[in-house]
Image (tube, rainbow, N blue to C red; front, top):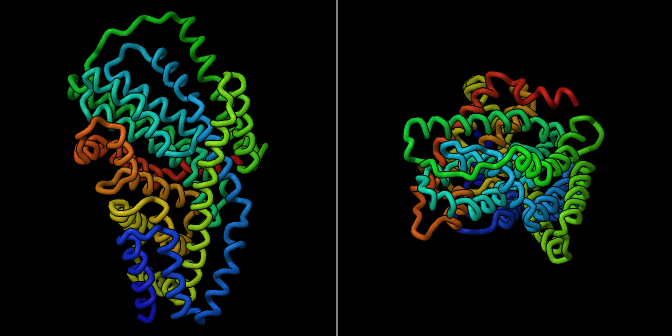
Length: 436
């Protein structure tokens, strides 16, 4: 088992360095240097790593990432999201847990406009948690729907994590983004059914309260002013890819132009908000490109050392079967999600999981979507799920991690159920990509 030493050394060092608090990119660079000296010719390998940097990030498939980040940042910083929340609040009737449904619907819309789960959760949490708790909603009905709706941005296009995964795995980014559309809507419906069941079992979890009766014309006006224009942006981003009019990069540029046009139309355009959006995108893009440069070399060293092929031969020697492998993969991601963020999980698991997926002959778009859903669960896996800490940050002082984690647990189960449905019915993920 000559592969076992490099496998254990490289994966173990990555986990160790990240465990002691070293930033992800630096942890990968440090392990790369160690691996290059041991398995790749020493200083000559380091020189090769440096020359690989430009090739790693000079990929056309990565171009949508900063554009989607700019679009989402402009959307949230300009306050356009407040209007969407207000319109949805007016249109949903006096249902039990109406604010939970408002949050869920808004989360689905915001996911198609920002691509950022952290931004969605932070915005909806800061706007809605105080109001929901004031209305007597129990924590599971206040925190749970916000965390569930926030996580939808992982699979509903334009998903920033989807762009990164598609680029790293050399998968058609447009097909992967579109593949998340139907599963994202199915997951939204599952979340809505969950809210309905929870209110049936425990009516006191979301008390009814008087709601002003709004005329039909007022509802139409609210939708026309605040939601229909957002639908145009969604079409520019998603519809143009689906219809074959634009590539993901072109659709991202169209989305930015559309948001700029809305800012001007609503009188919310300002140099300050544009500069802040560019600054946000620059920071995240710079960090992401640094991580990609490090992970590309990691994959090369991992393969050159024999760890990759050795591990594949070892695993397939047990003849686990494709579905058993998917189960093991999801369980591994759930465990990793307890201790690290999604990008870190992706960089560690892709060099291991992707070759095995190729061995089994999986459709890579289908497989990548299952990975994204598993990473989505990792967003809310205690004790270190990032969305949990975002929610604690906007919750009342004294809110415990246990309270937030218990609130989101049923939504995690819904996501795992969706993974099972996609495994049983692959057309849920592949219907729209096959139309491209």
